[in-house]
Amino acid sequence: MKKEQIITIDPEILGGTPVFTGTRVPIKNLFDYIETGESIDFFLEDFEGVSREQVIKLLEMSKTLIESSSTILTEP
Image 1 (cartoon, one colour):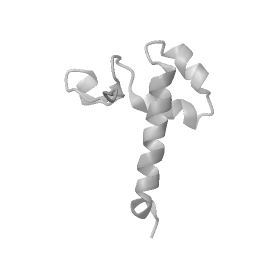
Image 2 (cartoon, helix red, strand yellow):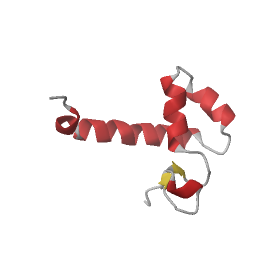
Image 3 (cartoon, helix red, strand yellow):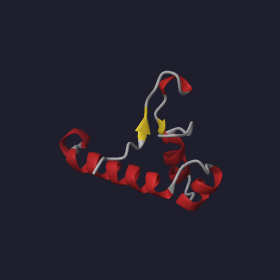
Image 4 (tube, one colour):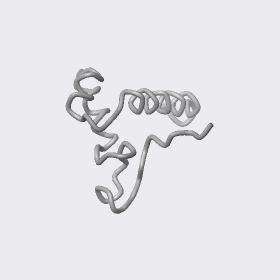
């Protein structure tokens, strides 16, 4: 089974800003929405090109990254 690419970083798309694959929607936008208390549903309404599956997979990837980087994230 081929792993679906969630994030695209391409200098030709928004100057290399990480975006959801197949869109021009920056990944940062999702975290901005979450940070201000907005729901995933509200984000998806505003950015119809992004799928719920992409958002869920990105959040799962973020969780895995944080869990595997606990020593890096520990404050001195």
